[in-house]
Amino acid sequence: MASHDKLMISVAGVRGVVGTSLTPAIALRFAAAFGSCAGRGRVVVGRDSRLSGPVIEQAVEAGLRSVGCGVVRIGVVPTPTVQLMTRMLRARGGIAITASHNPPQWNALKFVSARGLFLTRREGRAVIDRYGRGAISYADFAHLGPVVDLPGAVAAHVDAILRLPFLDLAAIRRRRFTVVTDTCHGAGGPIFGMLLRALGCRVVQLHPEPTGAFSRPIEPLARNLAELQRAVIRHHADVGFATDADVDRLSIVSERGRALGEEYSLALAADFMLSRRRGSAVTNLSTSRMIDEVAARRGGTVVRTPVGEANVVAGMKEHRAVIGGEGNGGIIIPALNHARDATAGIALILQSLAVDGRTISAIAADLPVYQMIKETIAVERPARLLAAVRRAFPGAVIDRRDGVKAELPGGWVHVRASGTEPIVRVIAEAATAAGARKLVNAVKGLR
Image (tube, rainbow, N blue to C red):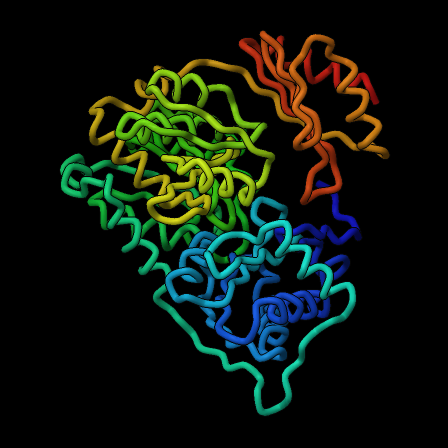
């Protein structure tokens, strides 16, 4: 992704390139707008390890305190830790300072409600409106908000995971798994190590220090995990785990040193959870059909939503889902919190291995096989492309809830404008790579 000067503003938050589209002044004003909407009270603030994090954190802190909010600083932590601590502390809200999978020159503010969830569309629009109108409720000098440090947030998060009702800690510990992790100098090193040691694992950590000097492209895609794949083989590990900078996405490497691909994470999680309790799984329109077949095999159902964690969470709550998430490696375990959480996903996968007794390769081999292609294209007028997609696939079932998704007997293609980047995403899936490529090329030919 190229740097550019456009600030990306959505109901989920705001992100941009630090020093151009996202400046400390902008971060301060957005934090003040959020605090004005949240009302005076405590707001949890955490960040990933990006080099710009301390500067943006200070701006966010100033913005919140200027409107009378108390700031609870929890340091360099995963985004799901911010969400969990906001709910556990009964704070008025939270702000996670992270650009997630974006390159290091980016940063962002992700706004969290008092429920520990990303903002709804209505809540997000209220913040954007206040920012735009300058309707900031500044406090006078006697009522500026205080600030406190809470250094134990990661330990509290791990403790909450260890109390998940489906975990058999003794069974996992008996297996004495060897696990290799790659957290690429993001926020995941400390929490991954803490959880895995608590589960009795032999842990080999690649790049665990949260320095922000990212050791690979941040997205935990299979093509970015060559070092982890080699390390799994070298250490005769049972499994390898990778995540992104803010630890909400999980990718898995098998004991054979093969990156399974991020779509497998949710499918494996759903297979395990639905084997324990029949019910529904909720995911977005861009997630692999693997989960549909897994759910059918377990007697469950799948509900699809527009892309975005907030949309998936709303669907999970409505349908009282057993499991949910997104095909980018985001696993949501409602028994813990309605948030994508790579650390909790690790615990779930290790529990599955402990119960099943087979290798991760053998378990994954039981899943249906599909080929997915994900591409991005630059289009001057996305609306025109979407209209063309609707006409291009006669006989397809068209879903227009989020861009355009065309469902065909042999596969599907989903085209949508990104909410976080200045691009259009094209995702296609079919039984063969050639079939998926044909669908992607058909869309690209419409430009």
